[in-house]
Length: 234
Image (cartoon, rainbow, N blue to C red; front, side, top):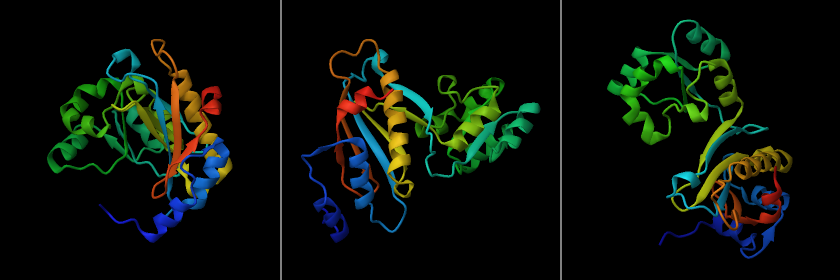
């Protein structure tokens, strides 16, 4: 069993594991315990009352965090002609077609965080589906990443668009910013996530939908959040 560092033990000692906090109060605790030498990411983990094995309960969605993620996102766009120029002008980091597919498939190049493709390029992109798919990078029309509106897609990703998906245990893990954001911005982002999850509730889900909510920093302990406010977030 790995030994707990003095820093992590000191952080854990500041958290009452049994206490359920209001969202803002929980975020204050997380910020206080984020004492690593880097700007820790604050993440929210929401356990949902769904069965992910059922296709109609596989909760998934996207949203643009109102205060961004605090992370610089490298966007790759597969496009040609006018759309290639449009993506470049919107701030895409890499734009192209066959040459980028070749670089990824032959050189193992993966120095990007998000991928967008115009519909007419999906035949080309499909050749590297086995590379992009397992990494969650394959463009998907349901997530707005297969589109002719490439400028909008790039701008949203640069502004803090995130994707979430319930895992096999029924939990959604979502980053809501950096500890340096402070309570107001982190709470605003967290409420936006909770609202999106509420709107994504499957009609077939019965009983308690928001089972539990926790927030934590990269290196810090989890802090319990009241699900009352979580269920009310719009």
